[in-house]
Length: 338
Image 1: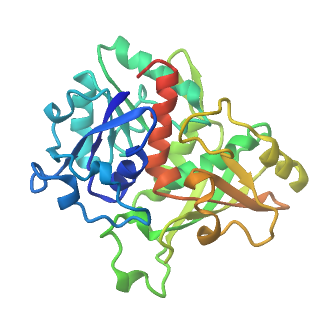
Image 2: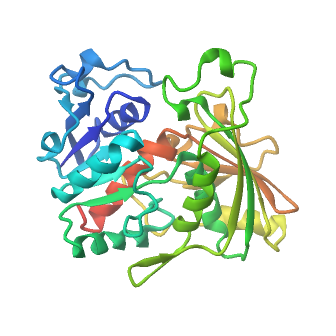
């Protein structure tokens, strides 16, 4: 078993990490960290469990540690659900101390030698870990993208067989993406909020890196532009994207690409049977009906129309956050980086 920890274990994404790791066949959850006010207490007594899955009793008696390098020194890899301002230095220090970091934070995503990975989409980018180690780092940092970017880039993966240069996307993003306390109830009820800070910029930058080409230890960004308009909507879980893309192909050809695409590996514990699933019904995908497909790791697509236009949707705190990071770690284990 591989000893793992979770940084920021009491928050929305931290709780998802604990949920996914509690009975993991490869990873032994040994360390949970949180703020100083929770440190030294059993996890079960300090966490306000708010997920739609039962609290994992196996984690209840784990003593919460302060979020420091020393707290995770016995871990092989840690999963970071830290805020970006805290993650920047701490993740670097942990990786330099010899521990692998699989991070959901945005701090290091765009660094040249840090993989920005969706396991099934750009696994070859894991080779950037070798670049980090050549610079003297004993551990590593691997990041997963922003939750909305994960849905977009995963849906684009089957379409790389076509040429395209321009993508427009409008998102309808769930309130859980802002964290438990992120959107006041009075602001989101009966409302759509047409702005999410820095989200549009992240979608543009990150998609180009994810779908870019690794050559000689460097990534050349993909040759397309992304124009995004991001909205917060009163849905608990599940980000929905309307996508317009300048592919010179028929809807039938695009649908066939969605239906026949296969990721380059299979059989990892967190990997769904269908990374991308095309739904034929004219009114799908929908968050409430489709977000939990593939144990919430499937990105559902549908409504391909002339243009080319389509809809993509996935669970933002699992496929778009904790689950993506755990799957990255599983892949890195098979590649001998962990």
